[in-house]
Length: 447
Image (cartoon, rainbow, N blue to C red; front, side, top):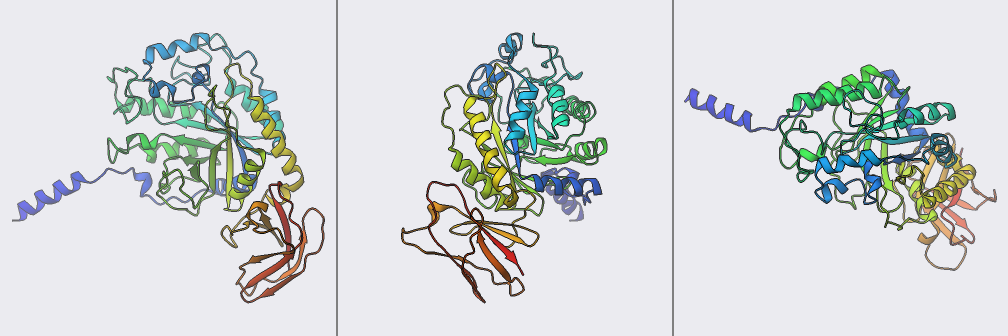
């Protein structure tokens, strides 16, 4: 009987998923990480850049696997990649003018092509293209010069290398022989991460993507985060780690990422981990695509993007807004137009966004709330106010009896607004709320 019990226990243990130790070990972030987390939350707005060989085909960053392009044929794109109009100073200047505090750029996407001068593989922008320039180096130097924080996106999966084993649920039609082994691929990744964190100055965050590639075919696959995460923190003690896995953050991670969704919503249907206590970031496209897609002119309106930025801040999160550069190295004109408009809005209203937190109340029917020091800002989205008659009454369900409001003013005009505070909450009377503007802001001052 004891033998049978032991055999049953062994079989049960072997059937359990093998989770990385990084998910179980207690992680106590260093002081440098805690400071970086605060700085990250204060910035509130960043720009995402998806750029690689895929831009040449103008069909998005997943074109290689979506169209089952053979890896040998796809790699020939490198021989013609010459983005003659790329200018790091112009890129960083345009992004800084948008009011963004950081840039996150793809160092290597799922197609396996490295956009920096790596020694781990010749399949990179310096060695495999006639362009021959390290664009990440140029961007890192320009970010340092202009005071913009730099983050690196890094893919965990690879549709080109044969040592990415076992093959996941994507990239199955690229013709890779699949004769390598995981140990070699893991060493390749850690070699590249070492380069990125050694040769490109101070990096704000390593933004990982692709964990989900193994979630259906190889349950319990061990990505060895227990080795990878300490390496990143050892190389740069203040570098944050984010992983776009759509589930509860693992031990060792410093931010939580929400793809195409604000925290608390799951319209994309990918997120299953709830909202953690970590700093939060929502990444979103400016049109419908991450990488350059020549037919995608479905750009979101300026008002929509401003409201999306305000909405993420009102959910205590950052917005990482994507731009997909053209194959010639220029940022699309439509993207530049929107970045400029967001910068103009933030130059006037940034006080209500930068450095704020949003912990008093969840989103309300009329909009969201941000706060900083003794100030509270009610961000009212005009289209949410029903009816055309004035005055309007805004109800704020403050039930904390220790929170006393001294004054309420309209942010633009500084006009004092009548209000009454009861045990049930705050009632503010406002006049005409102009339609067509993205955000009507009321500033509250605490007693």
